[in-house]
Amino acid sequence: MSKKIKKIHAPSCDWKAPVKTDSATKNKDRINRYKGDGKWAGVKVEKYKNQAGGWASIARNVLIGNCGESAKFHLRYFEISQGGFSSLEKHRHEHVVICIRGKGKIQIGKKKQTLNFLDVAYIAPNTAHQLSNPCTEQFGFFCIVNAKRDRPTQIKKV
Amino acid sequence: MSKKIKKIHAPSCDWKAPVKTDSATKNKDRINRYKGDGKWAGVKVEKYKNQAGGWASIARNVLIGNCGESAKFHLRYFEISQGGFSSLEKHRHEHVVICIRGKGKIQIGKKKQTLNFLDVAYIAPNTAHQLSNPCTEQFGFFCIVNAKRDRPTQIKKV
Image (cartoon, rainbow over all chains, first blue to last red; front, side, top):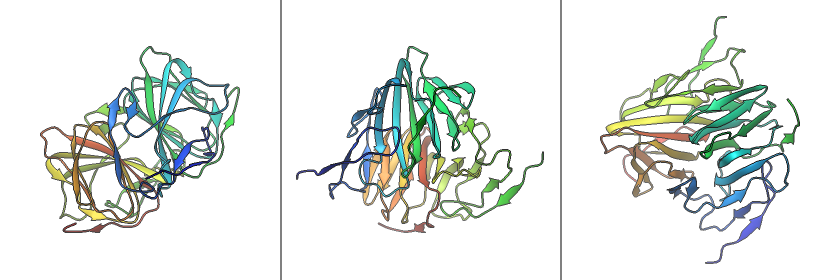
């Protein structure tokens, strides 16, 4: 069976992600098995954002959100290599960040803190934030967001 | 400062959870630090459901959802001891389940499968499901749901 792939512009932290609209997989029960090394079966490692600048050495995996799920949220996994960082940005939608690999830094407003295994961060609407990895080991974290969300604004300084 | 605690009946898989409505904490940035052993600082271990029957040896921790968060989703952590199980149930809202401690069984429809560390399950609307722990080690998993959701229907057989 051929799979219809529709290109959409996902609304945040995103490049044009391929969205599966095949009725055989759309909004269906499934398990994505963890393969180790920050990768899941059936999940493609994507570019963090389409536009360069303001971020480095960060990969993106959409675990929930690319298969026509009706859930009101998306689940992504980001992994930052040594010296890498996400955009310093803010937006109206919330972030929930859960560290699951290594450790790293999270800036929430003006405060920069370490995020360790299974620490859970809630970033409220319009709080500037950034994640970075000053360590040698990979820093990986889930990020949960509303499915419908506004586009982030990159900022230069908090 | 005194904290106002409002009792509400959360709509699913729930007993009457205490909801913090204190303006100092409501919908504010925060980090809940993982303390190990399936526990987080600032998060109370709760009863799985108010009504007994159809479940056993399962604890509930609300990581996102009890502090007036504006996010369209809640994040809970459930932990099942040896021989325990959640309700066999179905509902219109979706579940995303991520195993983070030990391993266990997940029944999705008629199919029972093992869920290992960081495996991610998507349970689509109206699919019967149940989680259980036949192992000696604790089985812990995150479960993400829509903030607004329908009440589950317990079923006896799929």
